[in-house]
Length: 501
Ligand SMILES: Cc1cc2nc3c(=O)[nH]c(=O)nc-3n(C[C@H](O)[C@H](O)[C@H](O)COP(=O)(O)OP(=O)(O)OC[C@H]3O[C@@H](n4cnc5c(N)ncnc54)[C@H](O)[C@@H]3O)c2cc1C
Image (cartoon, rainbow, N blue to C red; front, side, top):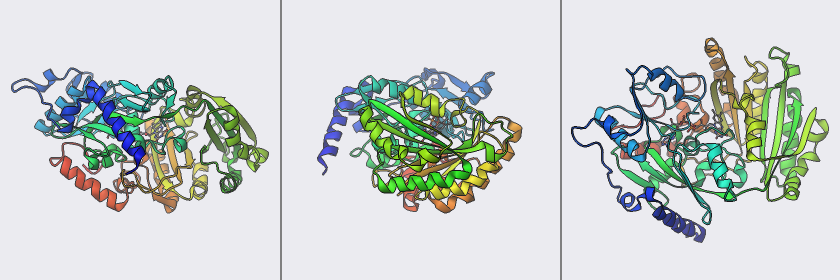
């Protein structure tokens, strides 16, 4: 047995023991925590707002569950804005009795609007925002409504950090449950789901249980990667934290898209000759933000490559970025910005701000591959981007994913790179054009896929849906997830992946 994991487990037990909300004794036995007394309407037992489909402000509430502007035409019966964990328990019990299927909403950023389901009771956990940090043990205990910027700011005050989402408002629970490619993932345990040490989960029968490597390990396996098809409500996450990098630096290089080959071959050479595995490496194929939308693709489409260093001091950060500055990236680019210092807030603003295509609140659809041939996948999508129907469409590749098959998470692939194709647009009338553009990206990138990332597949029917979700797991892991769903939610209280319920 690994002594480090033993130490982590005992630290976790102590932390949970300390937390009043942990209710450790009850959790160990998976105690049923009750529902509204007989005769009382469940609405009376729920402290948070309950919105019914017949309410005048229903449509406002329904639409605001989804962060971006592509609000699916799916209509839940009730929306419960939970104010407490007990509200979650009451809402699940109510739904089970009324034979309403439950869906869960945290930060609302899921591209397919996974929380919006016809006939559902949506449990909105976004108001549950407590964060406790145990700095000594480097563990955060967070409620499920916590967002990217909240965790990074709180952890930073303790000299710690977490691989949080690249945009400040993304919900930590949707992000981590589905995988989570966060800032500085190469040095923070890889995708964020691997940093879930334990989770408190309200199950279909209203019991709250702990999932950890030693308590309900099969639930622990499922919660680490199943994302928008998980069969329970996570009411608390215990997350591994990492030392805060004192220096964050980025070097960016801009090329015309026609020069993509220079970027991919240089990157390949740098990675072969130097150890740059500590760096976060992102390539964006995009429309130049300062060039008019209708400009010729040869003048407007670019490859914007950035290497990010998260290090203890400036010298170390510069050393990580040096191979890029010494390469053809620096001599052949049309523009470079090297060794730029950042704080997290600056990173959000500079790279994924709301004025940028990659952080814009617009209509939104995405699909992706996890691959060991990231460069080839980018080339396969370059012409597709040239012919994109709008200037905010883009392709993003994250290298250095360092994914390895693992037994303790259903997120289990051998892959180096995530490549996502993003359709972003403004007008509802253009939906068919942009969905079609995204759907046509799938056969271009799929030949390079070893798998797909469940948080960013298109689940609304225009791509490979519903088979797309199946492709986010190995065949064995998909099968095991179905078995666990049948075991933990035999009556089907929780919605499955879109198209599978
Ligand atoms: C602008 C933007 C930036 C993004 N940046 C990144 C990024 O940097 N890296 C990355 O990997 N992804 C990123 N994503 C994708 C993101 O990880 C997914 O969209 C994720 O689903 C968002 O989580 P959420 O809680 O905000 O969304 P929601 O829509 O609230 O949640 C999605 C689904 O997750 C499940 N879920 C959420 N919370 C719970 C819970 N407490 N218990 C049980 N199930 C739950 C539910 O099925 C829910 O429907 C980004 C998306 C957008 C729109």
